[in-house]
Image (cartoon, rainbow, N blue to C red; front, side):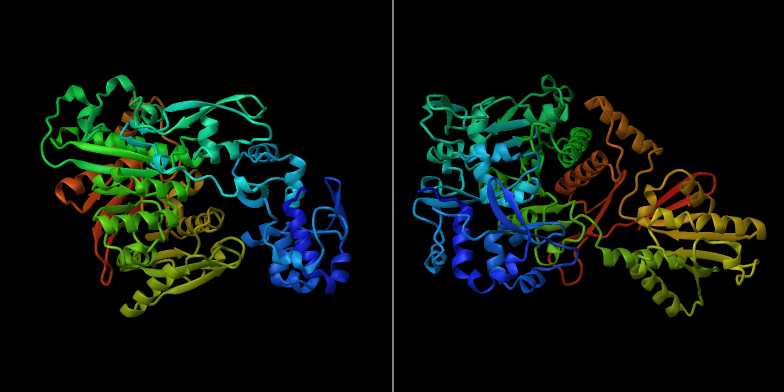
Length: 629
């Protein structure tokens, strides 16, 4: 007898719970999905699991059993399905005893999380079922397949567990700078049997579906009698030293690969062999553990940005090649997978590094942070601003100044700059008004100094009438309570008009990190009003340092950096310059092209925290001054 996920759930729900609530369920409209009828209910805005269960007279467990995706969260517009009584004949039992059996004999349930670009046909083929069966088991996909959805798929018991890498293939592809070491280079032949699937064959041979598909490019549908290549684990195959280098645009013929302890590596000397850098001193070994997504045929925008970060990091290594100390940069592709990070941590090669640059995934960063703590390796967090692991983990280096500290330092500087002026806080009745934490810090300091200030609330846009209470002969600092450009554009022009008409001697404006992204007329107005902005990073693209890095980047890779803020190539360069100097000289500070670092251990914390903040002054005439504090 053939069982499906839907029939099993139907038996559970119909037999165990619907006897007392069928009137509520049967009030719902019905819809035919692949020849079967279901009651359906569309989730309205602000509805919760509790409210829906109460409305339909069912428990949360009953709702989840018929709609497994609800376990991952309820979303507005989701369509919930309930099988119509009698539609699952011959495949389930309506008796209460069916509810006590989690799975029928010979059948197991696979949980599959939909990835971007996957299709119903592709997923069905992967698990050896038809698209009709997939939809029957997961009616929600009839509304369309979306990345992040969780599907539950019935497969024969011999395929009962998700693919797990064998002990021999657990180690990830490891790239030492531009060198790749990976496994499964050998293969054996395998004749496909009737009804076998990619999943069943991969599972039987101790490999993943992805590894099987990679070994058989172009084969998407299996047929009886086909011959497949089955990857077999062997000693790590030392293949092209430039898989990642090619992705990054580094020319392979410019490198000389070397090996240390049988592991391929490329040092600074290898990156610029012509410079004849002598090997001396302690090796500066850094592991870059980021989601480069080399497994994707078309890398996502996020993967491209991480690759740009790595390119910038290599520029830093190149610029330091004359320091006489060998550098080894090992790169590990997380593929955006927590399971892959588990494999990377299990690779003994990772323990040979003195510092790890970790990805922006909170769970993966925590895993690497704990690995660093146990093994005495520093772990740099360059990407998760709000993480606080550094408070308890001595191995962690938090690369962004925490928000609370940022507001405190910025408030100190801004209040000092307000000396001999009258502070005026500007609010819009319908504006973002999203800077309360910083403004409270400023007001606290002004109150402590006994400095009087004014607050003006504006409806619509600022005009001269809003400022009529301010004497024309005064000096003023205006603090806006918004980071939104559309709000700023309703305030700055009015300040300029009022100042020019009254011939004000001095006026300045205090702004926020978002303002560094403003261009066009907004930026011109910021210069006109002598604006001060605080930010964790700032790149003055017209500065000589920034131009040199941009020129070098184009020279190496043939293209410029992405036009984004912050620019990942420069972030990689600044990070590389800091990290390599930190490992060589224990230098805790570095004022970079775009980002700066000044690490210290906060009171009560175990790890290091970056305390550097930039103050940017947009002065009249188009001048820009950047100071680190």
